Length: 114
Length: 116
Image 1 (cartoon, each protein chain N blue to C red):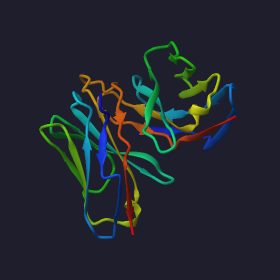
Image 2 (spheres, rainbow over the protein chains, first blue to last red):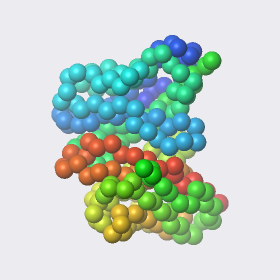
Image 3 (cartoon, rainbow over the protein chains, first blue to last red):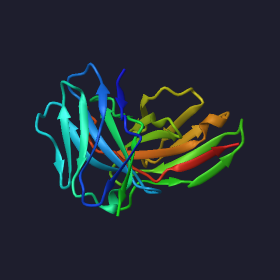
Image 4 (cartoon, each protein chain N blue to C red):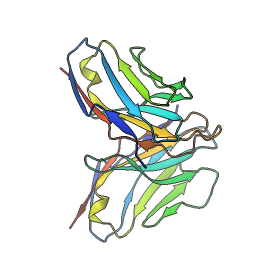
């Protein structure tokens, strides 16, 4: 069975600084998808970034980028130029193709400080 | 374009009662997913419906069930409520993507269920 681990329950970062959220996973699959979702306080979860395991290039979406290390089964999220609106719970998720179900980590609560 | 909607927003029930939660997907989405977000346990996958059929199920007892209607909306039913069923229940929808599942799931705001 696949598992996803986020070892940082809470983190804080100063506005305009860079922060990296960690995620590791365990799977015997060779092909899979990895996601980072953001859940702002009292607001809906939204997708931040997605990575397909067969792609070696790290995904990037504006200020958000990932460091995908397939051999190490690591999928960290880097947020550059942090903004107050980045304050949220961040969930790392794994999906095995064809299952259509996310396996989520327990989340990292990120607070951006003014 | 309207997002995923869920009703009710909040619900308070007592042990042993039954509850029905509702979800309307984004227009054009045929797949609906249910997740339980309990305190300290993170998000757990409950059910996936597509084209009216249950396609996958998480590790939950049979008293958690649901269905999907011809208009792709969905209900989640929980029978014989227990205290540990207290959680935020999230519904998500997506377009079906062949056999991969890599399409983004769009989440609703959730229904907060409290069991006393």
